[in-house]
Image (cartoon, one colour):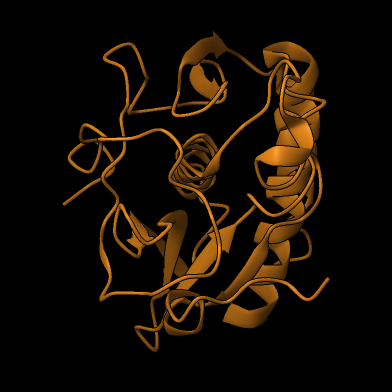
Length: 205
């Protein structure tokens, strides 16, 4: 199943919350509007915000801006672990570049710090955008030691579920969560083994 196939209707918008009881992983059940670009390129891609993609804007980066993203992967990673560090830096830069264009510069980590703030994002917005950014990087040959996978949700609807973007180490097959929801806009996402994330992991205060 690819990025396009994983975009399915969501039952509730307030699905991003750490803690509670965790179930086996399921494919992300996320509401995504029909106007979201599922084959993104730096010249044309969508950005979700305002909780569960309530607002979607289509934007583009200038070649010089995309070159800044490319620069985050130079020199080439010598290991998959190095590449994950490159990915974290590149995602942070993408958020910083996209913020002024999509109105998401003031997004705060989690949901409640940014209540009432224009451009605030929940985990559905974050995981959808991160998957889009990862897809663009992979298509441009920047990510070579990992594959972009479908988003994953932990928990059930009454047990405070939470959704993340996911990558897979091509050599080991190990999957990693790429989770930017806990952080303010422009900060490097947490990248950690997916089983650890599925167990209800959250960053130490």
